[in-house]
Length: 215
Image 1 (cartoon, rainbow, N blue to C red):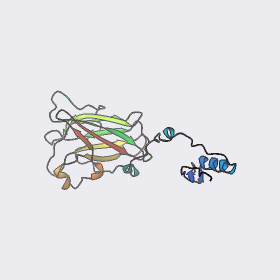
Image 2 (image 1 turned 90 degrees about the vertical axis):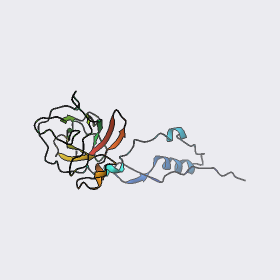
Image 3 (image 1 turned 45 degrees about the horizontal axis):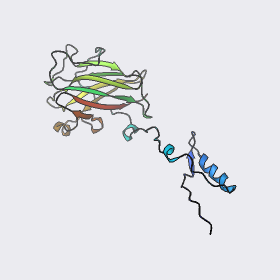
Image 4 (image 1 turned 180 degrees about the vertical axis):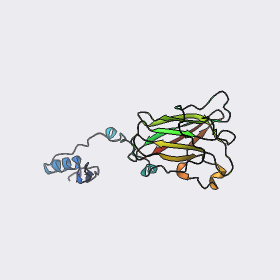
């Protein structure tokens, strides 16, 4: 009685770089070996096949980050700095960090990120540049600001304002929001797609967000 040789299932096709369907190299090899009556060796080993591929973009990267009005308190020519904390700073401290990516999940270098927000009393500095500043994304698209959690004020939920501009591209003006805020339900400018990811401790709140831009 002949013994049936077990053979692991393999995909019939793979996609080439032009998007055309073509026979995979393994499928062609199996067909060649089968035609010659040779035993199939399971290659590469399981350990090699289990190595994960480069992660794809998350679903939220299918579209660019939403724009939201800048509001009445924007001031141009903010200082180049990512740390807004000074000896007189009050309020709960927060680090806002993240990346700027294309819709293809590639990092964008030297993106201008201009941040401004209200203070712990819900007020903006309209004569100076307290809690205002800009910086540029690094070689991996990363950025990081150090500041305080802004307070709510009449008509608005808690939020940050930002302008995000890749080199030689249009400016994205938007706002970032805090999850779990009661006023998120009533603020007409709130967008769930612009919620930050938050981790909080008594000493420091950490917020993160990934911008997706036309670059």
